[in-house]
Image 1 (cartoon, rainbow, N blue to C red):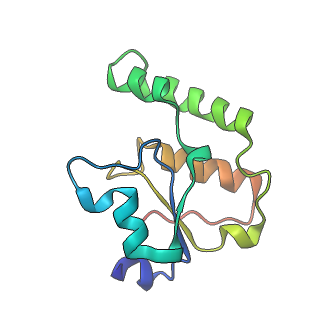
Image 2 (cartoon, one colour):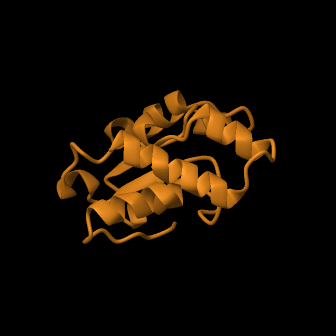
Length: 124
């Protein structure tokens, strides 16, 4: 919470397909919602599909394939269609990966920034 408050995060968007965490129960969606209150939002429209996740985890697709497939998914879903710059002010994208390097949250952030060119991406 301190890190979120330090950078004045207005909303945490949970963009995971599944809002549960076996290894770290605090990060389950219900626990985060209780801790963050109105600042927590579940945004499954930014989540990859189970097929994309399984393909990557099982080694059937490479990271470049994952990136391509996820970007194609976002292009099909248009998850930013109903958003305004005000909706995006000081949001934090949440997923499971520790680093944004090989994570769909980086790809989602890049997608949002492409739709809203004044968006600044900061990895916490």
